Length: 139
Image (cartoon, rainbow, N blue to C red; front, side, top):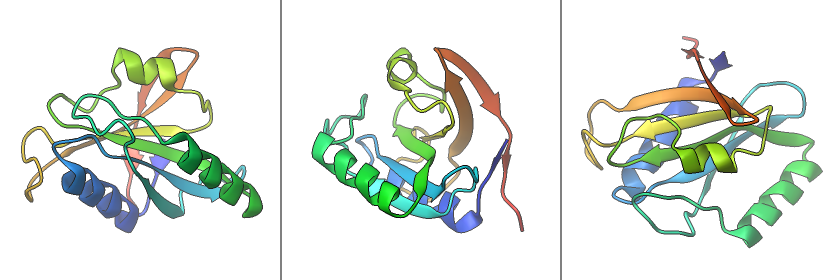
């Protein structure tokens, strides 16, 4: 189960809307071993694509060094789908390399960059196996 603050959910959704029609991507870092998402880190989709996302390798290296300096790890790795449901694609599954991370997908297919409902779902992806998990947003 993913427990995540409302402000982080709002930030992820806002990033997905802002980058639409391209996929948005980023990380929510948290203290190592805590499973607590805490620090929102939006990234640039180096692919600049509506159907694929890719972290820029230099940006990703900087992020991992920064997280290491702060004793953090990627608790949430998120991206958006702009024309399909919020479910990992074959490519998403193939690139999922953080077994402890929650993989959050946001679908902007219904509203695009406008306000309105979005799909916000979280998954664990380990060795190619996808398992959806509950998302809890404490009040």
